[in-house]
Image (cartoon, rainbow, N blue to C red; front, side, top):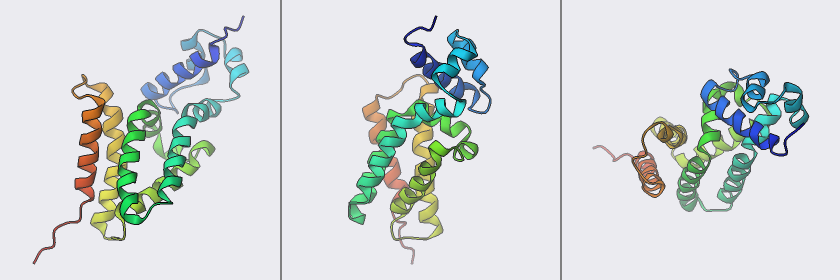
Length: 186
């Protein structure tokens, strides 16, 4: 007998297991055991582990694509601010998905569902660096792109110290500080 909410249970179990053991470290058998269903029942709902990953990440990727498209319509001075705020908001909204992706980042970026993510993050990095192509500006932009999600999902491991509103404001402020032009030395 297939329960009506098995698909949601599979997604929830996969998210937990991918976050805990990594995408590569989790098998379809592991997910089926966690759900309490057979591997055949799991495969009835999803054709592969990649299909589960695709469905888990689809909402986050869709929202990243919306941000990416919106940034393309803004002048450079407003695009950077919108990129920081939008990326912070996405990172906080999709903490679990980011944790999954970060766990196996190099190999997961090769998955068809995530290939556009890499392209979009490269472009967002360029927006964050602005017209400054110095090593400091590029490193700061990459630091912001890597750091925001790491802090957003890393907070789950600690006792909640800050409300989401306080954390959001702190992430935006820290990102803007990191991206601020260095003072000129004489």
